Structure formats: C-alpha cells, structure tokens
Length: 130
Image 1 (cartoon, rainbow, N blue to C red):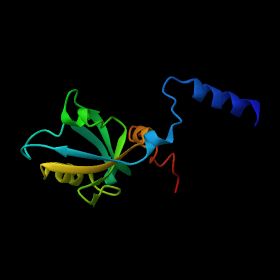
Image 2: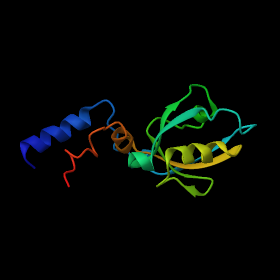
Image 3: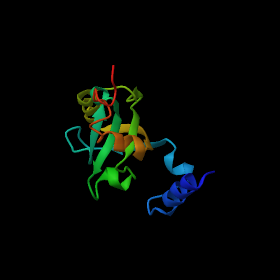
C-alpha cells in the first residue's frame, strides 16, 4: 500500500465518527405504533425516485416513539409494511408511511447514501456528459 493510501486510511480511522462494526449497518426491523393515523410519525424523510436515490430518515424528533425505537438520521428505509421503498417517489413514500397506525419498517444505517441526497452535482450534465 502506498503512503498516500495509508495516510488516507489512517485519517479515516482516526475520525471521531469512524465505525467499522458491520453490525451497525445491517438491516433491522423497527415497528412504530401510533394510536391514530393522523398522529405525527416522529421523523422526516428525504429522497425518492425523482431524486435518483433511496428514501432516508433526515430528522428524528427528540423523545418521539421513533427516537425511542432507535431510528436515526441516515437510516435508509428499505421496506414499509411489506411495500418496497427501494424505488419509490417521495410523495408515495409519505403516503405509505402515514396510512397505517402500525408501521413495520426495515431500515439500515447508510450514511454514505444519505449524504448523496445533498449532492446537487451528481446528476448534472457537467458531471455526466452524454
């Protein structure tokens, strides 16, 4: 390994947010129960098919049920009540999330994918010439 790659790897490993425990990135089940479908979910999402990315948790309200269940910013929502979220438009994702009082989600912590939702240049013509 050359010295540049060794330096980059060491910098990453020394970063406060560095985590190499693969268990933190595996899919997990979260079951959110609300008394009424009109109650807040306790979290916000961003992304969707029209944004060329998955659907991610962008904010979790402190002390909400979602917070207590361990949902966190950067979680990718893979499935909700047996409905795939892999390729879904944002508005449809919101509709599916809000339609039931029991919301069973399969999520995985995927901060790299979540950070890509903020990259405005990844689909520009300059970045992807035709």
